[in-house]
Image (cartoon, rainbow, N blue to C red; front, side, top):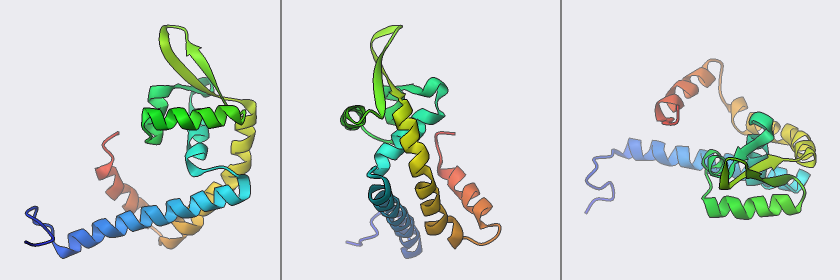
Length: 151
């Protein structure tokens, strides 16, 4: 039996895949740590607040929000519970669907997001963008666009 399996992956292909995974994990861990230390805000919470801030009327249906932040519905529900307890998010009933709920960014949530965003952006710059040379950002974007099936 070969570890590369029947899929015919070369050692180089498997190495590139693993490098992509490690880069994503390294950057995510860095952002998580920086946001927790500076703002007591986990990365997943930051992501929820950002998605809501960018949404019309600072609100999204829970199902839509779960898809945007890549959490299960139950995982998002637990996270929204915590954010609501902290006063950063509110839940509102959906007028045209009795079972539907909106997550809504509160003013306190918007303020917390404004405070945390420089830390988040600094992390992206220092852990990712600064490591790329001129022209490479466009190349990375083009390569990742091939993998982005949501577009």
